[in-house]
Amino acid sequence: MTYIDRTGLWLIATAAILVAGAFVLPHWLTFILTLALAKALVVQGVVVQMRAGLVSFGQGLFFCVGGYAIGLGGNLLGIHDAFALLALGLVASVGLAAVIGLLMTRYRDIFFAMLSLALSMILFGVLVKSQTLGSTDGFNVHGVSYLGVTFDGANQKIAVYILTVVVSCACALFLYRSQHAGIGRVCEAIRENEIRVEYLGLSPRWILYAQYLVAAAVSALGGGLTALATGHIDPEMAFWTTSGEFVFIALLGGTMHVAAPFVAAVLFAFVRTYAIEFTPHTWQMILGLVLLGIIIFLPKGLWSLVSRNRRVKA
Amino acid sequence: MNVGALPPARMRRLTDMTTFYAILMDGMIYASWLFLVAAGLTVIYGVMRILNMAHGSFYAIGAYSAASLVGWYFSSNGEANPYWSYAILVGCALLAGLVVGFVIEQGLLRFMYKRNELLMVIVTYALLLILEDATKLVFGVDPYFTYQPYSLLGRSMIGELAFANYDLALVGASVVVGGLCWFVLNRTHTGKVLRAVIHDREIAVAMGVNVRLMFAGTFIVGTTLGALAGALTAPSISVSPGIGVEVIVLAFAVVVVGGLGSIEGAVVGALLVGLTRSMAVHLAPEIELFVIYGVMSLVLAVRPQGLFGRTVARKI
Image 1 (cartoon, each protein chain N blue to C red):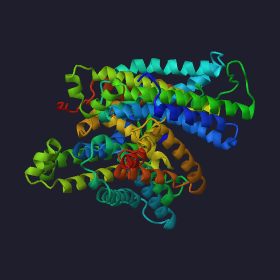
Image 2 (image 1 turned 180 degrees about the vertical axis):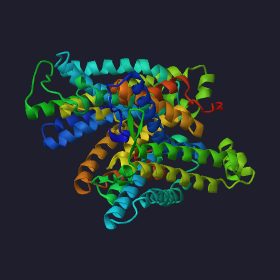
Image 3 (image 1 turned 45 degrees about the horizontal axis):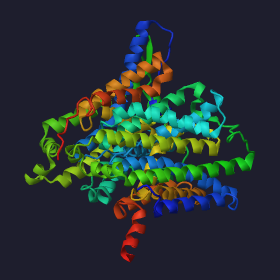
Image 4 (image 1 turned 135 degrees about the vertical axis):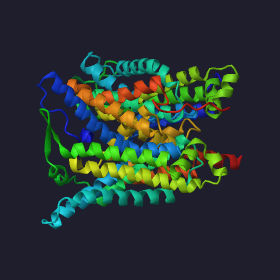
């Protein structure tokens, strides 16, 4: 697969339309889309691991590292370029994942879920208690430039939006390719029967390690873009309920297609915006009921609706 | 964070020996609270293999129902014997746990027993989301304070340190709960059958054990234990939205350290986490939160199945 196939073209076309939308759509809409796409990147991280049978209840760890890299890079290191900051978050996150991945890849099932949760809660605990890192309030991110250009208020939001769309598209293409390459196929085999994969002469552990690093990388990008878009970071990014939300969106979309997390995240963002406005106290209850519904009726996520129809037509 | 529930260090600048006793006592009190919270979780996992994320919500439901009923008791009849409030606390927890446990087990979980463990985590996560809002709808979002049962017992001095008698009674309560769990599991017929189910579910069914009944019973008992922990904690905290979410990860830490599904493990886990946290509170307060999950990660790294857990052979 050395060429970009139909799905790739679709992804690029959608990204192009979304970029063009920056100049047409109202600001509140592009803002919601920015946050949703950034969140979807973290969800991609969850999905990458889910394909291999691992559920991470602590993806907020890398989301948070990516976000804090933006804030700390600006405040402590004096880096103000958005690309450099994102790269900083990426490097920090992958570096961290490279170390704890050695530990994490020894665990499966609920132990993986619990340990990932514990690790993100450790970061939460550290951040909440350290004054220099902003404690519970976190801190603001400001004065970010884009390749030397600084934007004011509204234009800054548009710049972040376009950056998010471009980064999302690039990640999507990369993940799509890797999903259909050898390593992606093997992940499904690992989920079905890890020991037999071992018998085939492959090392599930190192494959999962690679996937863990990829997940950390995209999650950090998601965290970084969220920090750029909202201009604020706080320890809540590493709290386990944040990670729970990522798992929710991952299940909502399903793991069948690379676009599913994006669609699910956007859907989630819109439903939440309206639900919080109309029924502020039953929002979580709706989430819970939808989650149960998905588990019972659509175990492969919303995307199975689309693909099932397509098969009938063909 | 108010999950500590119990007043931490006082009198920091005393002699080393006093600090030592303070660490020990605070640690024991915190550990017994942790055990109360974690007992239901480990019972449910041990028998049913469900890592119940909604356990924190059961805790919250127990706390809310106890706080509101005890509050009503004291406000409606001023001359009534205040000691009855303890009966109300416990009664509330039992009732709330029974009802909630029965409804959830019969209405939802029994249709899902064939699913894998990981999916059940997500199912109970959905339950947690639903129960969080259900609690808000029923009890409102304003905090409840029921200090009466806490202050009624007064304080006592142990050496140079003052402790609330209620906290000391909590230690007793956790010993009773732990002892009862151990007794039922190891010294009764039901316990023997339960252990058979824990050991091998399929063989137990083949031997004529009504596993569904055992599951239903276990879930209700687990729920009730969670609600009881909440009800007993209610007098020493302000009962407000979010207490369940904070408690659940602590309970996870305790049972994971001890080994999922093991009562002895929960005791040891609670002691380990409780004493470590109390040491952190007294000696290095800034790492208080960190240290709990630090212990959990450390134990998982060395012994993934927990201190008392069994290793399971890999099946092809």
